[in-house]
Image (cartoon, rainbow, N blue to C red; front, side, top):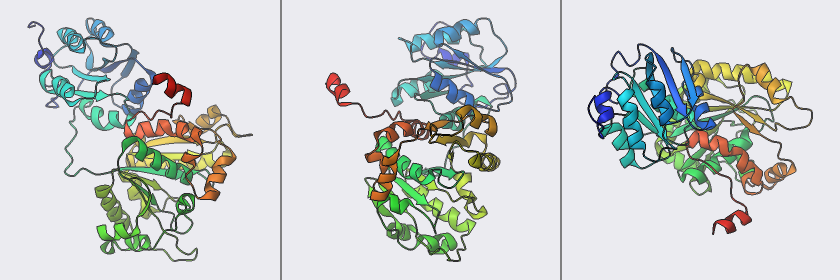
Length: 411
């Protein structure tokens, strides 16, 4: 083994970041050493279902180095360098005991591109993920490396689709759609579209105090009639960088939405907006399922009531079949409402964990709807409740606003 140098990892593992050689995915365990619960959870869910055993341990680069001194049946190691005063020296020490065919992925606090290039290009690290680590980032960026397949380049950068599916009437899907979109725009400073596919009984316009126009129905029924100019006419500005695309069709209208129309509209939106948050109708018609296929996140929303459990199970199964198990998230809304089921009972009935919990936020939520104002502006607890979802979608820690005392103490 050569002496320690910045290129040591590249020398020890020449295939780490470049080719998916046969040894990378043919044997052994994937072992992760992480320092916080959030990163551990993201790795477990993002790597769920890989054909070999996944072992997540608490620790950082020093613990990983000691582990690799005695273990041999390892395919890949994921190491957290957030607590390392000299991460380069720490990774060089790991490289000295790491066999050449073991892939090394790194997570940490640094976000600058120079550091990323140093690790991946110079040191031969497979991939680097900055914190906060999300399930989506693990699945789309890290997972392909660990199973021996490199992520393919995208020909065109496209917006991120987030689908909100209510498992029962009144579960709060529209409320979550509207306020998640607004908070996402605040956190990312990107352009966000709210797409309401409830054309006959949609409530997004009511919640935002605007009247949807015409045109969305035509675009969904006939893709040849949809273009960027139509979007400009249909989209309503509801905040900085946020646009609403919705309709208000008569209850007896004979809608003939086509799969081609939905796909074409979604493609136009993904070229124009960084994120598209979609309020899905329930049940989900076959023509609208392209949204599920395109979505990186599908949030299934239910209240702690027996009536929503069956539909939530069916929705989760549908999303898993179309997009994969790692795309579906369960949101328990009004979780502490009187007489509701406990979280443990909900999870037992679903056969899956609840990913996000939103408490009952009381009458101010209803008042906001009646006033046609986003509840995010008048119910501070809602912003805190949505922070986890924003973090998962964007990869940005959406910390709740600090109190006045906290701001003064920081000044």
